[in-house]
Image (cartoon, rainbow, N blue to C red; front, side, top):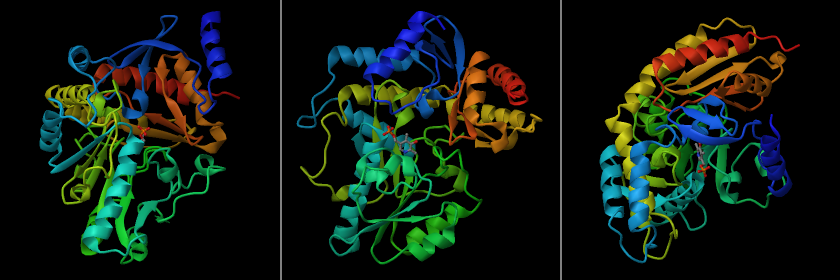
Length: 404
Ligand SMILES: *Cc1c(COP(=O)(O)O)cnc(C)c1O
């Protein structure tokens, strides 16, 4: 590494809070599936900023929408109307089949907003006694980093010394419908769950799980809140991951790819009266629903559909998964995925996923380890067959490599 690269890394370490441990590469440019470091080395991005740049880096049409809108009007606050919000509502509602929309910025804010909304719905519509609302969540969940959200995390790293925590959450195992049935009480207002647990290492629930979950929620008047911040907008080869299960959530959360990586944009979508309980002054955000965010999100949704990225995710995801399954390496414990949300879980004896991610960096692939033994693979949805095959070749040589 050149001295300037080390300078960037050292300066970050000197001034920044050390809440991340990045791979040792300093990126300065991106286009489509590729990113370049400060020394001009090119990489295939197999993380896509945790699925936020699904449309590919610096997509020209989203860029044009951003620049055009930035010249006209960027922020009004919700104290006034702007000429982008209505169009954003109309288009996201049409795309997802939702009736009501609440625009926010980060994914965590969308989750927080959903928690507030389903509690309010519980008190004002379902008739739960005030202060008694319960929300059921799953073990090994990832819904963000705010205090309210880490209150129901099961990962000690994200909780230790951040308490006291918010009450009102019950934790059950993921993929276990009987556990949900047992946990529901008359005070249960919602079940908040990821269709596929992303940060837990791309954990896909057993077939039929969500059909049962949907039945239980309907039968008990419990709102099913699907956190599709990572799985949504084409990542799994369908617009929403719920479509693989043949169900519809009551509340759907989107974020990440909603802006194609240009800008933080998230949304709470509901197909019933959950969002209808919010009255003026009860919830808000200075930046939520701003015209720049709306213009960017509108372009991000448009290119996703117009350029066939969802179908491509299904096609290339199947090719990638098949290729990964064909790699004969005794380091591999399991390969899994849906669409372009893929993971290779290594045997503990292989010595940790991080060293493989660093070896992949040397071969021109950027991927990120998760939970020590898993390599997550989630390239932009615009990846081609040739690029998938190129990546598979390098993954095969790396995974069969002996580090000892
Ligand atoms: C990334 C993510 C979030 C949090 O989004 P932020 O924008 O980082 O706040 C919430 N839920 C899921 C499933 C995610 O993947």
